[in-house]
Image 1 (spheres, helix red, strand yellow):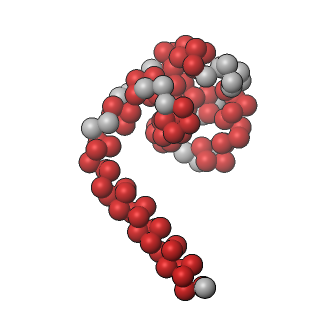
Image 2 (image 1 turned 90 degrees about the vertical axis):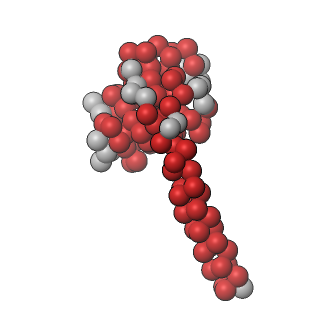
Length: 108
């Protein structure tokens, strides 16, 4: 039983590594990883796309501050791009702008 569990865990880890290695070239040309975000446009987009459910962005950021606290603003923006994309993807340009907006708030 323990051996089977260990094997499943190992296979899972290998799968994650393989996924990262295989998708890295595609990520390099992905607009969400190459565009520079515009925080002002991100604030407007947040108001239109996110505020219906998440009225106060600082409240949301308090829930994920444990991830963002020790990161630079650039690292926060990258992490938030992934978060927004996986949470509710509004498109590449909107994603980078919302991430720039939220990264600026989380750094203040």
